[in-house]
Image (cartoon, rainbow, N blue to C red; front, side, top):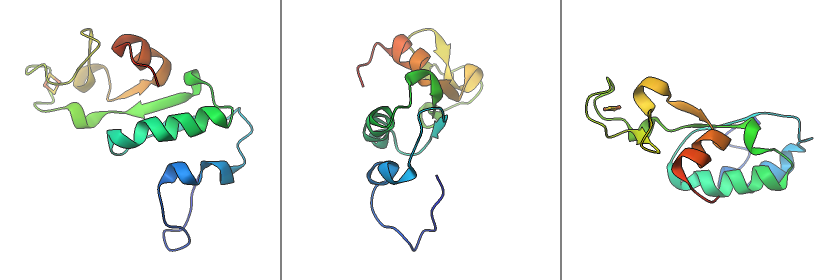
Length: 99
Ligand code: FES
């Protein structure tokens, strides 16, 4: 979904309904982690399945070379090595989160 900055103001989650999604699209989500939950909830309400949502979680990274452990997802994956983009379904399973 692309919008000109001056056309709309608000959170991106407020505009997902206007995108007229059909449910067969893929969503790539980046930005502040606090926005992930409302965006994912809106995507799901518009028929986008977890398998079609991808999250960029590079904000977890510190060293960026697999040494500090700051970016570990679910005790198993390193964002800096295995990511930084993860499929939401796999991310949710690894982190045992409920969104
Ligand atoms: S950023 Fe340090 S281990 Fe990934």
